[in-house]
Amino acid sequence: MHPSALETGRQFFETYWREDCHNILDIGSRDVNGTLRAVKPEGAAYLGVDLTPGPGVELVLQDPHRLPFDDASFDVVVSTSCLEHDPLFWLTFAEMARVVKPGGLIYINAPSNGNYHGYPFDHWRFYPDAGLALARWSERVGTPVALIESFIGKRVGADPWADNVMVFARQPFAHPLPEPLLCDRLPGATNLRRGEAEALDRFQALPEDLRDLKQAQARSKALQEQLEASQAREAALSAELAALQAEQTASEADGGAASLAGDGG
Image 1 (cartoon, rainbow, N blue to C red):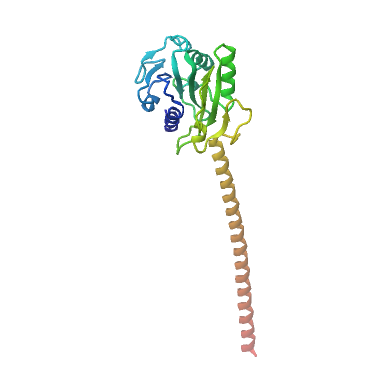
Image 2: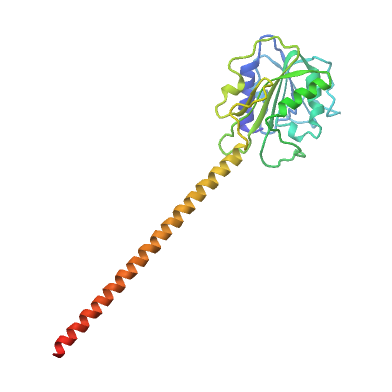
């Protein structure tokens, strides 16, 4: 888990955790460079499931797309840096919607860009409209959730990842929404969707790394143009200097010839 994912998860709990919440299910919980368990609310029961044993895993799943829990078992279900590795992530999401309680929350953090990283495979990236599609899928399979918010997080330092963060509520959901929402707490977040609105706030068509690349290319082009202009000025000055030197040489030659003529007379 990269640092920005851990920090966003911490702020999710800080934003959405309620007094009536008690337990958390983490899908893909194996501790690879960090886990949301480290930032869970105090006193929350935390259960981690994954496909392989390891740190942070209480239960190894026999069927990756069937969670061995009763319907409506958890107050909050989270998944961070996991669904990109899941070949059938929509089935996993349907299970997340099934096991979360009515009024409970689903939090997903998955990359919208970045390099290939196979654990053991790397199948997907998630664009700003992914939350709408997953909400629609949940209705089709009979466990409806509503999208509360989604956004693309800002990269941190040299970290290449720009995460798509999505928060859903299992229906019916009668709780007041937090103010501010998670997306409004994170400076630099783009492609904000509040609820299931069609329009995106702070819209950006290009992911942040490509925007940075485009800006770098523009700066490189400007510097190249400045260099070419400097080289042209240098060439012009060199030509002017050469002309002056030639003029001086000619003037000196004429002066020398006149002196010789005078001596001869």
